[in-house]
Structure formats: structure tokens, C-alpha cells
Length: 301
Image 1 (cartoon, helix red, strand yellow):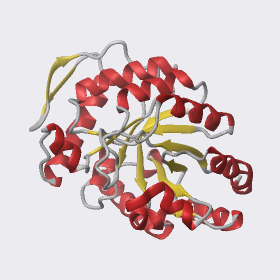
Image 2 (tube, helix red, strand yellow; image 1 turned 90 degrees about the vertical axis):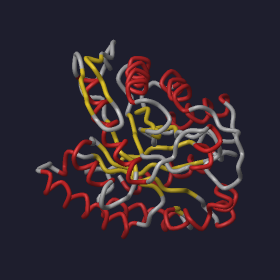
Image 3 (spheres, helix red, strand yellow; image 1 turned 120 degrees about the horizontal axis):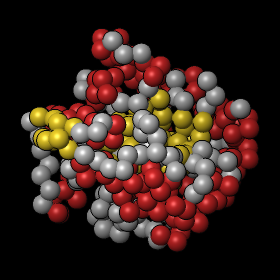
Image 4 (tube, rainbow, N blue to C red; image 1 turned 135 degrees about the vertical axis):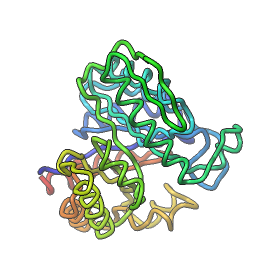
């Protein structure tokens, strides 16, 4: 299968104008995906609260583009009731004329939960909430009415109208937890995304996902597999983009010469990735993405 390419643009320390300019440029360069993240504070140790809200920005992305898939990587299940999110993404799919993808995750940034008084339960509880939320959203997006009785969420003959343009709006689950997260993917998701891991680890997690699919009686080929990677043509660029998170993300950052980046991208494809999504943060350097589109993508295809 041909590897497809996208861009995941962080919403921190930027403006709506900068993002719109970046989205248009990315689409013009031939990328097939653009996604937003879901944070209220910067997704790093800085403590900065300069960050645009995800649902509103997702809608803006849908209106500013014409061709790309408009994704989210990923909405935290703890920030919005799944019925609220289902109605929002159905509208975003209408705005994009059928290009929306909904990514869901268990959430991790405890600092913003604490700042806003949002409960931050154990990982086990957050994953249980995630599994229930995926089912609630799926029902609301596809069924005339949905009733769901869970430990964390309940729906009673709930409706979501108008429905998305797509008959089955893709729901992706984000995360790399092998015991629970990948099991949720195997049971419920149309796609899976994990960020900043090297190709060998990605291949191992693909194998774990395949095992869960076999146990759940699911065709693993029905699940789209994506990886988020950084892009830094020099070591200095890694530090500039990621600051205090540099050491954490470095294993999943493409860097070096064009040929070294091409080779690394090929390793992700060999490991099972169907989408390679370049994660960028402000201050954006669109010329870096231009180079990737001009020199790397053609060498892979």
C-alpha cells in the first residue's frame, strides 16, 4: 500500500492567521491530511496557556481547506461528553463536505486538568471512559437513536442530527498502550495513531495490535495505521521546535540528509504505517515542509 503523508500542526504559541496560512500552504504542497490537537495549555513543560481551542480550530480547518482530510489527534475524552463531541464532529464533517476524521484518546496532560478542575482519574479509568466514549460517538453518528448504559456515560434514545456527510465517519484512537489502548483499537476503531516512536518499536506495536485483532475476531486490515513524527533537518531545529520535550520525541524525529530522511520514512512504511504525519509546532518553518514535499515524498512514491 502506498504511504500517505500529512501534517499535524500544534495549536500552541500561534495565531489563527498563522495556522490558516500554514494549512493552505500544506494543502498546496500535496499533503493529504492536516490535523489539530486538543489542549488548553501548551503540550510541553513550559506551563504556557497560549493555545487555541481544538473544536473551534477543527471547524476553521474544515473551512480553510478543500481537499485534505481534516483530523484530530486526539480529542481528550475527559474534556467533553461524547455526545457533545459527536454533534461537533458531525457539523465539522458537514463543513468539510465529508473530510473529517475524529481521533479520540484517554488524555495525559494533568496540568490542564488540574488548572480547570477537571477530574483526572487513574489511567485505567480514563481508558474505560475512552472505550465507552468511542461506542457512544459511533452510535450517535450512525444510528437514528442511541441508547448506551455504561459506568461513565449514559445515553437514552439520544439523537445527533444532521448526520455526517460520510456514511461512516472514521474514528481513530490514539496511544501506544499495548494491554488496553491497542485492545480498544482492535475492538472499535477505524484507525490508530501513535506519536514519536522509532520504526522498530512501531513494528512491534503493529504486531501487538494484530494479536488483539485476532483475539477479537477483527480483520486487522480494516484499521488504518498512522504514526506522528517530527521533522528537523538539523539537531538545532529539534531543540527549537520541541524544547524541554526534545529527548522524549527524538526517537521519532526525522533528521539528517534528504537520503537519511527518505530511508527512515521507508522504515516506517516497512513497519506497517499507512500514514506518516509530520508534527510541527510554532514558530512554524513551512520551508522545511516544502523540502519534505519536494525531495522526500517523490522518493518514497
